Length: 161
Image 1 (tube, rainbow, N blue to C red):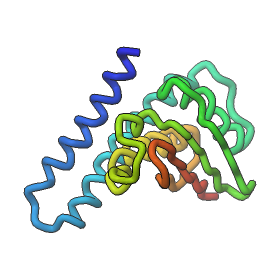
Image 2: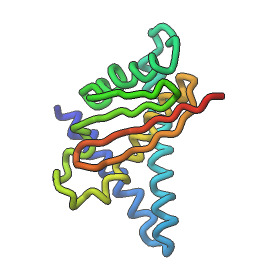
Image 3: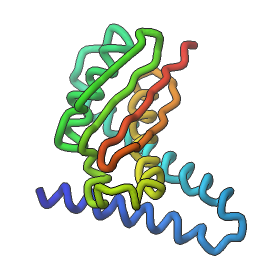
Image 4: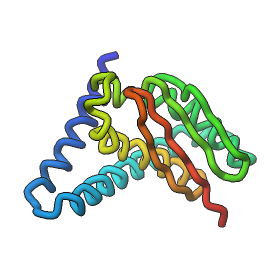
C-alpha cells in the first residue's frame, strides 16, 4: 500500500512541476498543450519500458483484442493494482477501457469541482497506454474522458498500417 501512495504522490508532483515550469509563460493555452504533451511523452516512455519487462517471457499475441485484454488485465493490475472494470470494442480498431475508480483521480473530491483539472492528471496514463501499445507493434491514439470523478474512460483507436 505504501508504494501505491508513493506512486500517486510522485505523479501529482510531476504534474505540478511540469505545469509550474510553464506557468511563467504568457500564452496559457499553448503552454497547456505543451504540458499535456510533455506528460504524455513521459508516460509513453514509461509504458514502453514496463510492457517490455512484463512481456519478455510471454508468447506473442494473435490479434489486437488479445493485446487489449492483456493491457486491461495484466498490465493494469501490475501498474494500478486492479483490472480495468470494462472493456468495449466495435471490432474495427476502437476500444474503450473504463476504470470506475481510477487510482490517480481518487485523491480528488467526487464532486464536479475538480472535473476541469482531471485531464492534466490523465495525460501520463494516456501516454503509458500508447507506449505499451507501441512496443507491442500497434500504433494508436489514446484519449481520456472523465464525466464523474474518479471514474474515467480511455478510448484507444488503433491505426491500421
